[in-house]
Length: 98
Image (cartoon, rainbow, N blue to C red; front, side):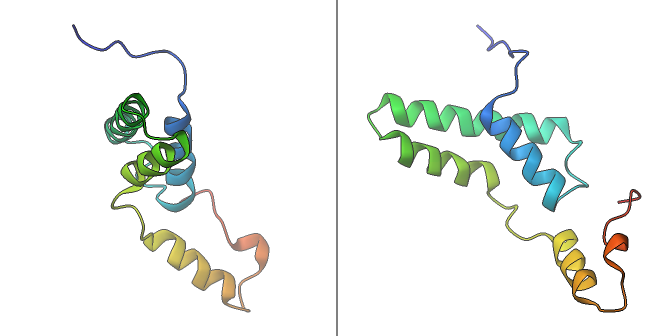
């Protein structure tokens, strides 16, 4: 029987969307990527808790699964470089075109 998607936003989904919007804005609208990573993190979390792993450890391992491969952000690196440039006014750090 296929797993039905809930119409609610899960913790892992919200965490991933926040992270992607901040560090990888070009990936934030990729629904397939978000759904796949969220499902993997949720399944790992619940299977670990079911087998007796404490919630704190299960949560940390699920977050590792959620963010695997997303550690480096070229977007955030460029943002940091611009922010450190004294010739760029603070109100120009972020633009709506990104």
